[in-house]
Image (cartoon, rainbow, N blue to C red):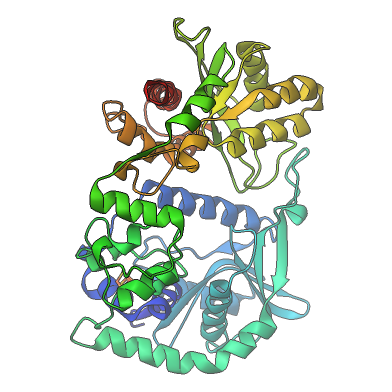
Length: 492
Ligand code: SF4
């Protein structure tokens, strides 16, 4: 059997951008490396897929030994069908150069049914396209499909005891939608094959398609000529507005027409960059700083989330706290104290030791400063809801929260180095350049979260002791950054 030209994923990629399809086949060297975040998403998808197989237990797995051996999987699938196998996992089909591997194929009393598993909580247009390509390859391989379903995560499921698969997963038929898309597939397949067989890279400029439906692996290549401080760096400007400027030939800040509808903050970013100008509202900053009540607590949480809930009283993808850092300034000129917590990964729900330690560490008086109050407040409310016996103490902590982000969000303090952003990752280097995340092993929250989740699920392969230290260092820097940011605010 000849090797396939298109797979389900390259078909979707080609629908997004012909250039991406072509580069993926002929210029793999331009492709970005798989990031840690992408890897975490892939592993999550694999875990969910394996769990969903248990909805139809006892099947035969046709997964090929190697990624390059799909044609063997196609033959094996046909053999299993001929043998009368009723349930096949990773059933592979190939038709007209298009390969499609299906998560679960079932032959019950009513005939063949196809199930594609997704680790998301809803069905997107891309998933409909995805299912249609499968339907195309399967039905054209001689299998009459009675129905085709997408199996996805039900985000309203709450774990209480062993995972209830029927509650965790939602199974939705997409056959009617698939049949509506099917007539266009042969032409689309022909068009994409033509792209793959041409001699030149398709002449396609960057556009909204570069991130819709997915971020493109070739962005670094196609976007290499976009300079720093381009219209694409204007904070909180919708992508279609950015491309409106780009398509009219405007790339740099100094080319933006005066009458272009940017809001006040966006013009502030542009003008402050062009004139190298900072904005500082000393009066408002003074009021903010003078209003703080000591002892002052600087608090930061880290969370993790899994598609399949690990602990009772939690939902799919719910962000669960596992770590905090707390710097304490007993008086305005007092000595800084540091406290921290990092949950064990021994199967105990991290939320209970977390909240018990936090209640003890936070005392009962003084303001608790956080950066972006919505996050910490939301997590504290979740804890109170899941463990109502701590409701009173958590309520008292919530009353003491104050947001250190306000002076930057309100633009009471703005410098060009903040690049239009008020996130701590942009504010810190602008205000305290000597304090940097760059020297840390764990440099951002996403890595912290994925690392802890891996340890918890027993999938972590590195040095656990060292990595726990790295996690503590990362979180500690977050609250140290807040201490230093407040110092800078006081100094103005
Ligand atoms: S970065 Fe944009 S233009 Fe370039 S290949 Fe990807 S989608 Fe196409």
